[in-house]
Length: 297
Image 1 (cartoon, rainbow, N blue to C red):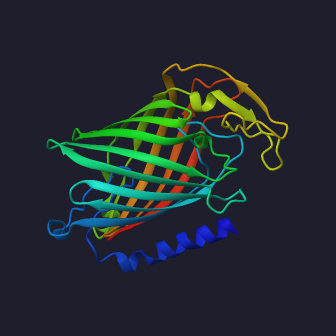
Image 2: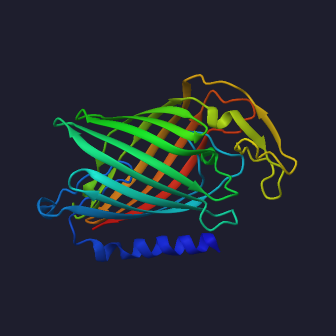
Image 3: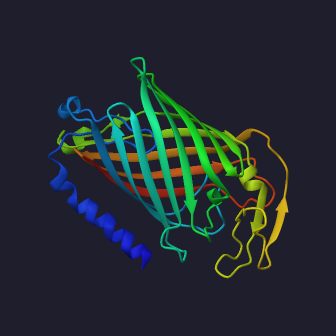
């Protein structure tokens, strides 16, 4: 029932697209929002962006559980013209009993660096349901700094994140991408393009050091790192102590970006290759499929 409810919401947003195509405001990303490039951006003091995403599985910096957890997420972001912004995102896993499995709240500041660069700093706090099977649920907070540079032929982003509260980990992600316009497909009437990206993730793995092979009903065989003291109901916990900073994952992402003015739809495919797995980590190379839609006003 949870899955049907989420898919109906997504279908409604897609069907609304033609009616929303009259506006000219560009969209803003949740973790690094941009000021919309439109005529009223000179007088408008802030912008809201509502987004819905549906994906076939969840992961955390290249790590995933043996059992798939497809999900739907909704987010609302406010960006002030000063660069200050705030957002809230909720995640609903299709195969769990809880209606809301995770909620993230973030505040940040985005700014320009010369003519080609952009920076973003933010703090995030995570709330999880009591029985959340997500790998991310072993931590509660994150501080992130992101720098982006447009080299004309290549767009590079470097993101550094420190997670703390529960487990403590440092991650660095290097992205390289380039937007390829495909406007002739609609004779220039719709902004459409590919935005292929190659990412390398490096970091520590304290979040994965304490892991449990779950034996609870409904979670058989799932790699589920738990907070200390949560090993119960027959679970077996093994702890390995290592804080080595090493390559964790390689990602290849191919999103298709379709813009209808204020409204944007982005189906995407991502192939993830985890490396340097700890003993007992059941992550594997796999494809992830998602589609998201957002509306800026």
